[in-house]
Image (tube, rainbow, N blue to C red; front, side, top):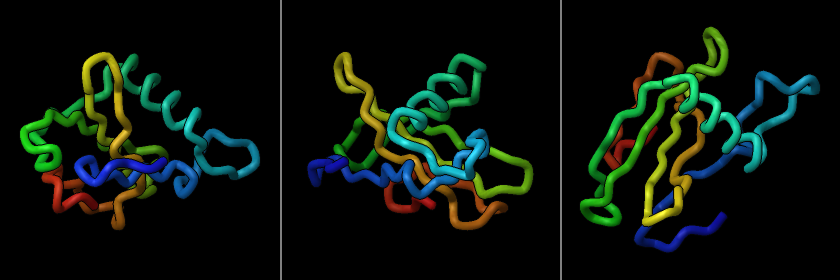
Length: 107
């Protein structure tokens, strides 16, 4: 999924193991969006941030635990008009590391 330079992205569902898969598969674009929708419907905490690129845009960050003891999943979304743009969907590097929502310090 390419993004213009003014909207950098780390949207990588194919690199994230899906714990609900019976065959140890990774997320797809569709299953990533389904997880996001499910977690939002369940009332998952969403942190609102101001992004650097584009300057002043509002981002919506979720830090999800998929399985006990697993790496944290970092999800960042951006709303543009009537569209939701997936900006980040990837594992944090260290399970104890807390994702920093600032644009330059994403895990």
